[in-house]
Image (cartoon, protein in one colour):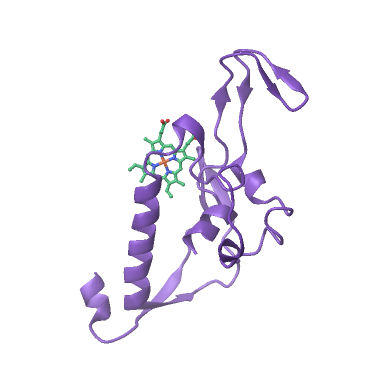
Length: 143
Ligand code: HEM
């Protein structure tokens, strides 16, 4: 679930780099000082890698493995996010605790619209939900 959420709407959409040495990228000869920006969002929406790329389908991560060139929500290379392992661990803990304590109901059935906030993407108006305790006492224990 966490992996698919980060695929569908990566928090960071591209990771800019400055070319340090002459470098061949496909048919392009890039000179030092040239800016390049591998686009995480575009890679994550390639239909040859992710059939029906706009669908939230967490099972796709059980069906095959993706290389660091195909799935890169935390960037890549020397500057890859140093908080990646912590961020994924935190997401799983928070979701696990929240889902075991509460039942969530979307107040608006329309999918949230991702919008750019400076360098990151996030839902345009938050994601309003109604909460109900999953079982007696669980919500208080999680709070
Ligand atoms: C879901 C949560 C997060 C996402 C999607 C994310 C994503 C990213 C991305 C895409 C980059 C750029 C990597 C590149 O240029 O190749 C980055 C860099 C970085 N992130 Fe994260 N990040 C997350 C959470 C965190 C957390 C929790 C921390 C710290 C505890 C953190 C610390 C950093 C730092 C320090 C850099 C700069 C690394 C460098 O330039 O060497 N991030 N992150």
